[in-house]
Length: 313
Image 1 (spheres, rainbow, N blue to C red):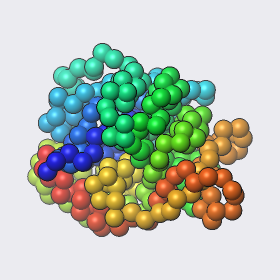
Image 2 (cartoon, rainbow, N blue to C red):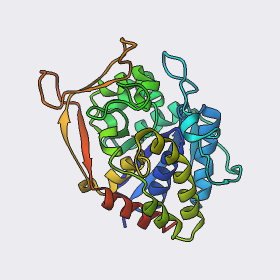
Image 3 (cartoon, rainbow, N blue to C red):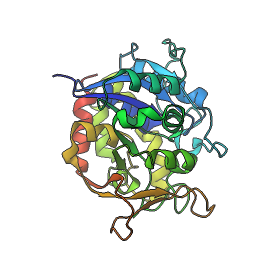
């Protein structure tokens, strides 16, 4: 199967980030040009290590991993150990990685890659705070028109926020970076909480990963069992939302998702609503549509795709 997507995954792993990375590395249609780590769910020293652990778990140690921004553009770093555990990947016992980080800053790698590859061929897939992407756009404004599109997990509208009443974690951690990205003019697809809260890791779905009988299947089940306990307690659901793999699933099977083109702006001034993604779902402003915002997912199809692909690793 020929490669149909060249991507850079920008990530702060995180158990759900890990599943997204595994899905990308298991899919022959996707060429992962590099994985760039950012501070988010846990500090950068852990997110870059976790990215390497996942590549080794997938049996893809040749994947290039770069360390990026250690903190947000303006605000102090907020992390989420209460969700992801002290390591960010609590659940399975994963060995310390032997593969090395590439000795280049993630932002330099993003800029260099986008300037070298043909315009309109590279998709950026941010799964965490948007600090690295914004820094790259600020550092080299010529990259924006060269990006094919950005498919990101972040924000929430009808579902509100998950870290404050108004804000979803990824956007809240670095709202100023999110503002740079949403006003960049790059075609953007958004997987907000409105979608990811419909993709729940039920006991039956976790059992399907364990039933693969592989190291990847078992580790995925262990990660999801750890990760979901926080959201089950918070939302009172069977299973927790599986956020970040929605980004990669959209590249593989866009028909799993439904949404509409909207204007999205990010609040950067009010402490009450800091990091809110203000989605003009009903078109009540004259602001230009800058994002395809997803609202619905075929959750059974989504989990079937995950199990099928992760079974190949």
